[in-house]
Image 1 (cartoon, rainbow, N blue to C red):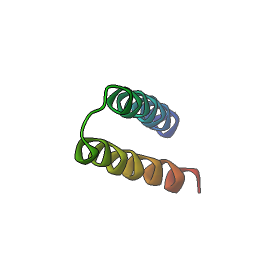
Image 2 (cartoon, rainbow, N blue to C red; image 1 turned 30 degrees about the vertical axis):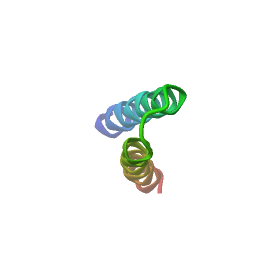
Image 3 (cartoon, rainbow, N blue to C red; image 1 turned 135 degrees about the vertical axis):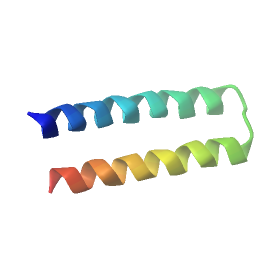
Amino acid sequence: MGLLVNKRNLEIEIEELRKTMYEAYKNSHSYEEILEISQRLDVLLNLLQRNKQ
């Protein structure tokens, strides 16, 4: 059960970060800020992918 909870938390965090990145883009935030969010999102997506294997 612990792995499922962690996976679900990770999925929620990924979705929240996607929303944050979209809002930053929509509100014309700086390229650097959007890039930073994107890189954080990449790390989380990689973690999720590793957990699925």
